[in-house]
Length: 383
Image (cartoon, rainbow, N blue to C red; front, side):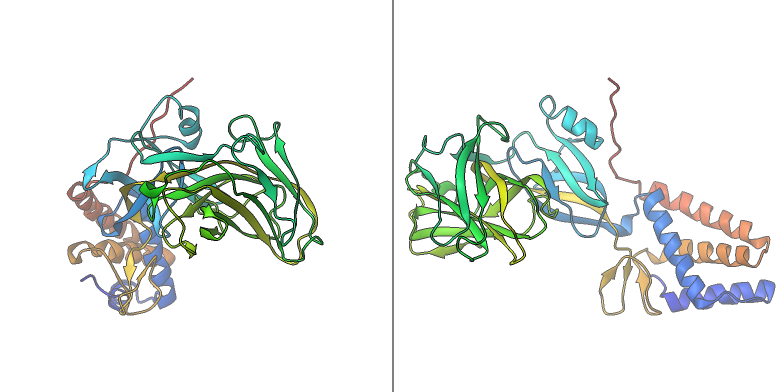
């Protein structure tokens, strides 16, 4: 096990005191150790921080949430077998979406990162309703008795797929129940037994103003009394709801069952938006392309931001207390020692700082070939 923060602090302070007679405070050493960790993570994919997590990949779905400790990607694997994927810049990922399979990218929205992945053989899917018409496959209607939905139309101008989307407005004084719902109880029955407890119902949803939106609920069943219902509070990529189009994914597994729905004869759909009591009347909520998909279960291998373990065993990004220790092998934790010594001597304007930097560089040059970086590099084309 690597040395603890207290052990490293004692050694660094002793070294600096013996050579200069000066002192390097404990809080400064902790900050120095954490700067070293950030350098090692950003400069080189470091072996102690490797992690992996299952990921369900769906056909036609390209945005996925990343693990909370994600730092950088290594590979995508299928039952232990690496998949040959090309890492792209996000712009190139979208540019080549229709021409190239097995691409991966890391995108951000206001600093929040998510995974872009196109997998050639991801899962299976079936359209539940294309939302191109109010009457072409059953009849869509607002639930005006207990919800605030009103003015349901087929919107042929603003849609995500096909020729139209379902467009409805909110009249918050209509029911006072803080939700709006549209329903279709007469659509053509579908056999969804192959998706039971494994599939996700996806929909493209347009939000005109997300300020007071709490959640969305999709309900499917063999009639209005025998249903499954699932609720989401974020987009499928893990991001918060945003103004404009959002891709929502409703998991069958864990959904709320009412009655005894017949999985081989699903002919009922209901879509609900729930909001806070601060919601005001609004127009032009839209839903489009309702479909169900089974995933392909893959595994993402990645470098984690977790580089330190507490005495209680909790993984964390950096040193926070004296009994924390890094995940480096004992033979390699002198990297932290030399870095902290170099910064300590530098703070005292001592020439030994350069010698410690050289010791750090020599040790790192031995670690790197022993544990080659596995992170994926972006491949760029010029157009």
